[in-house]
Length: 165
Image (tube, rainbow, N blue to C red; front, top):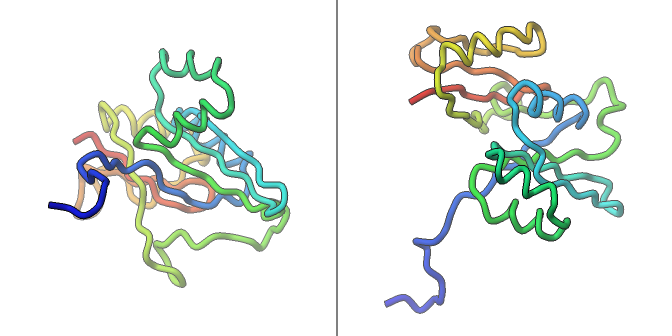
């Protein structure tokens, strides 16, 4: 018998956070290229940063989300799985020499990637290739030991695994 009044069977993974140097560029990538939807954002004036929350959302949820208050959108964001949080520290977009460690090169190896599941990897990769140099490919489908996974990189160099299994 547990002494805690919480049920770990109800826990869910909600979101992961990565930093974005330039939110306009990153939001364009995630919204246009990966077709994720911006479900909530919040500015922190005193601390000078903004959180942007993106997710894959079905059409019905998206339509109702547009009618929700800020508090309702926030509650929806933190009660659903599969959310990506982009944190932008104001001013980084104006520093040409600024970059974040993506976790896949020195210094700062550690973080590996996030991943998206697609319905058809071959067609998804063709679609991603249609964006030309807006999509960087650390690993194309068929390369390396894991031939059934492709890896693209977002504007800050964070890796995104693409798979259909």
